[in-house]
Image (tube, rainbow, N blue to C red; front, side):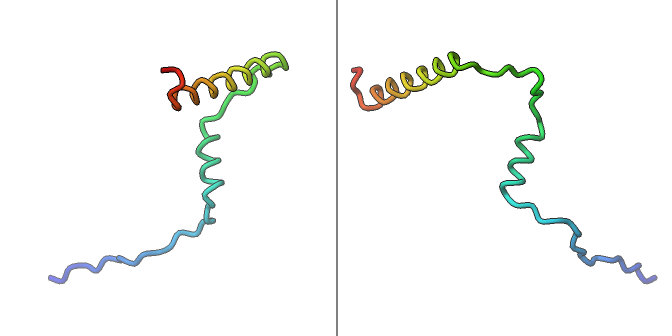
Length: 69
C-alpha cells in the first residue's frame, strides 16, 4: 500500500508589510482610551504639574549626586 502524498509546499501570505511605527501605534491604541471620560487640564493645573516635575527632577539630581547626605 502506497501512502498518500501530502502537499507540504509553503505559500506566502498576501498582505501588506507593516512598518514598526504603525505596528507599535496599533498596539498602543488598540486598548483605547475613552476620551469622553477624560477632562482637559487647565492652565493652573498644567503649571502646577510642571512645577512638580521640575522639583522632582532637581531632588532626584541632588540625591543621585549625593548632595542630600
